[in-house]
Amino acid sequence: MIDLLANPEAWAAFLTLTVMEIVLGIDNVVFLSLLVARVPEPQAQRARQIGLALAFVFRVILLLGLSWLIGLTQPVVTVFGQGFSWRDIILIAGGLFLLYKATTEIHGDIEGQHGDSAVGSVARSFALIIAQIVVVDLVFSIDSILTAIGMADHVEIMIAAVLVAIVLMYVASGPIAGFVHRNPTTKMLALGFLLLIGMALIADGLNFHIPRAYIYFAMGFAVVVEVFNLLAKRRRVAGG
Image (cartoon, rainbow, N blue to C red; front, top):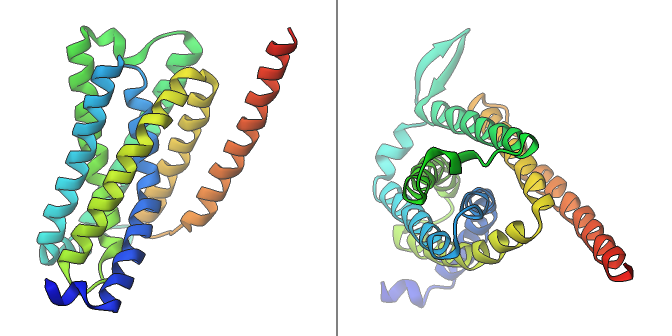
């Protein structure tokens, strides 16, 4: 371990992996922020802590089981002449879940319903949110770690990079969730992002890779447009 701290190549790998984990974690943060925006702040903070702690645990477990994880990329079923691995199946299922979740949330907003709040008590809603976070964390963890394999020779470096990324994701998720709560129009924008992310996961599962740079550019452009809309709205309100 001491040798790694004095190794410039190890530090370069750590920085590269950290940046990559942060970029790949954007999808996770968007989903997490949308879910926790609907519950009171004490529960929202707890949900963020539990959700990102689980994301870290899943990633570490997957890193410690690299040989098993790599086996997930081997085809296990063939459909119409195309082989699908467990990784492909998990990504497709996760993408479909995101499409379903985003669509139902959009429908609930347009119809004036409150989605999971109708399920029952705050406790039940909180438990449902945690369950959804667990599902999405697992999907994003597998995608993230499989992408990271080969970028570093030591598991310790990967775990350190994941830890730093998770901490930064936690710091970012609070302000993002609060912003979505204060500006309801941005929720629809975030749901549109989930639709994009869901389609990208399904495409990856079908062995049709969509460069994430294209998706993040679209998301960034939409955010800039929304910022201008919010500024224009505030000026109209101020001008009264």
